[in-house]
Length: 242
Ligand SMILES: [Zn+2]
Image (cartoon, rainbow, N blue to C red; front, top):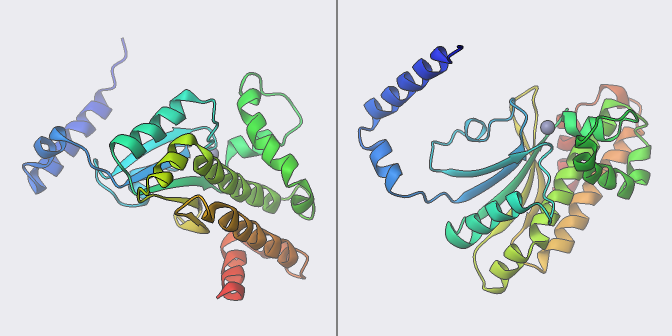
């Protein structure tokens, strides 16, 4: 019988360390949770929600799945959003993708991956929707970067379109939906600047976010296209908009 002794020992030390800093920490937390944020991210082990934004237990409500998808028939994701919005009354929902996402990459590959292809079909639909925009990058890593970004924007829109968020906004509940993407190679979040705080804002925020990717397409046709990282490209886009 194999036991996870090392992990259990690490857990004991972790709990001890936190209790030393704040003896009431776990006791207080056990009474209730009042997070202000719902994080919808990828299951990838390199994208741990709390650590990335340096938050303690109790501060972030989290839902993760392969490639941070928000599918309206996914009762798991919908239930998380409902609980977060209606009971916890979170003020922010962030959809957080990441560059180099294996699910996004698999979605545009031609060989089959079995059952998961049904799930990845949702990303394939994002690819088909933006095929013209993405065509300039051919099959380079930059095309994958852009598809990861577009996937975040589409999923953030899907959050906005849920009956849960629509109802919250109709009730004038304070709630903003954001689109972020995380860089595995530098540990930094890139804000895709999709921030919708009411139903009327969604279309404008969507158009603005897509127009920034269209600028990235123009930059990709420039002379130094192969050397541009996602971060340097986005810095240029921001300088154009600011
Ligand atoms: Zn991923």
